[in-house]
Image (cartoon, rainbow, N blue to C red):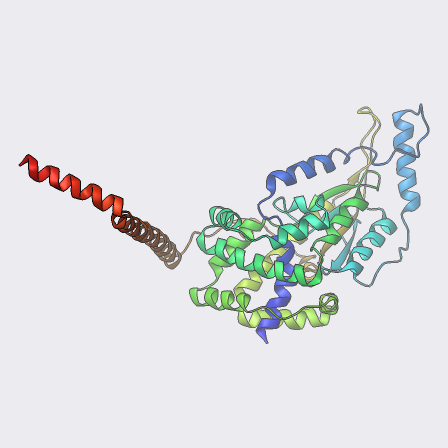
Length: 392
């Protein structure tokens, strides 16, 4: 039973986390591009020529307000929250391999014309926003020694090996569905760029922190059990299975099963990220400063409209934490490795270098035996021996 819940956790929470986990430099280019439109008009194609900056800003703002629906028609997957300042946050709960989730995101952004869009991504995974489906599918299926080396270098031996197991499961799901995860985030990025004065924020905790905290929280036998469970996750998955991840009751039931088997894993991968996402959504929901055509204009602020795009599994946690003061300092720290982890890491390194040295010795020994067995080599050795005897 717990394996089914583990598959759900991988599909709903870990798969999007695995995509382009080491692509921070590429992602910086994407964010640089999105930030260029944060404080200015996103679309000026409908504006008349020879118009002043003040009029352009005013017209764009009025266009945005006209498109913003006072009573928006929202999908069933949207949860509406509010802040003390009067801001409204529309949280779109998604399944990461779902076409209908993409449509939910597009419809919500078009209806509410937000000031900020927040997605469940961090700077290490932002490159998936600009990559096409074909490239993402290829990336997900390519598991090689270079990726293993990068994972170990970035996260350590145990975390790196566990990350590669998770990547293997992610690639299995991706291949079966023929669809790369994170399509709803790419749609959110595209739609946000069409809304005047709309900012785009990354709302998830950095993935290296999540993995290191998750691995540090598990005991040795829990790590073995988790690795065995991941290696045996070969059951077929369908689009119907994916859509079930959007059903809150079923999701909570299966997450409860996961908590029973791996409470610390659930805490670090789901609950702590609930807190982080809540914090980032609240930061995004601060009052929006109205655009100004010049520095001389007085500053004016209004309540914000925010759209958050997160996996459905995070929605209950965000609702639970919404009216509490959340502190993310503790969940951003990485605990030092335990004594057992240090011993395992040291043993793994000694074993690797020992096997490598033994392999080199065996190869060199066989090579020497082969060279000595060649007739030409034996003849040369006999001649050298005769010359040595003659000299004495």
